[in-house]
Length: 322
Image 1: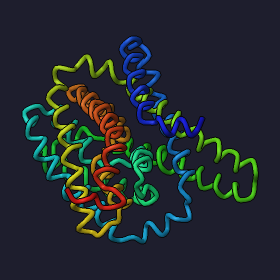
Image 2: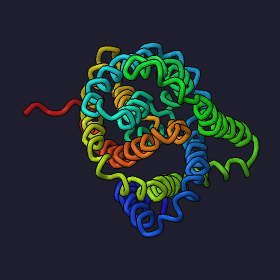
Image 3: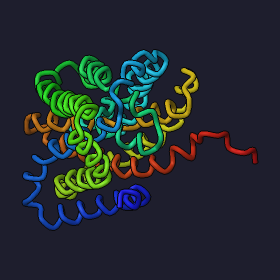
Image 4: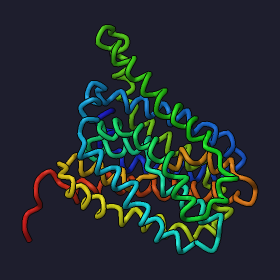
């Protein structure tokens, strides 16, 4: 069964997206409850993901200065330039502009590890870099928002959701995974837990995709006329970040797994972490949360595509000359 699930995981993820969309549109009253389930489901998924990465390798990953430098340059120097250019298309609408900036300026620290691992990337190095990426976006996001929108924006922003998301989505599952790995070396029952979680990776990813889509799809439908302006921007971002990620990886002399990891990091955004921040905004910015959610839906489809596309664009062996 595990082999079958892994073989057909991409079609299964597409099915999960479809099931979530159908359920969310058919039972919109369930959206608030499903929204509350996003973080718990994501925590379990990340716990299973972290279990699959030997945490003893994290120290080595953190010592790879060129990989970390490439991530930082791509996410905090190149991406802001791209985002500024794309955001000019919605600069006349403050809510759309804030939503686009909020989500595209923040690199992903959670399910990027899962998707990049499926594509054969150095996902252990992304895991090691997650705290650094989170810290850097917390420090630099206010600066970029102030630069692109003006300093008056800070009167309506609250950073508390960032801290809460970091503790829930990174620190907690990572600590539990470390404890489980430690016990597994000494206990057969802990080893069985690790084996069970490994076998549940595909179903957990399917559950996460379904819950996220089902909880938000009706809100997206309700504001679709406004959101049609940002969907092309999100698609364009996913497209342009592939060559940019490859270029930065070559500049910093990354191997194939490292290059794939850099590409995924540059393309995936922290939508599930910034969503609580968007939901905490006052009424004039109510549309911001839906703008963030729309990016989530576009990106989930994009990541399913990336899992198949990136290994072909960045193969382990050079492609034959035409």
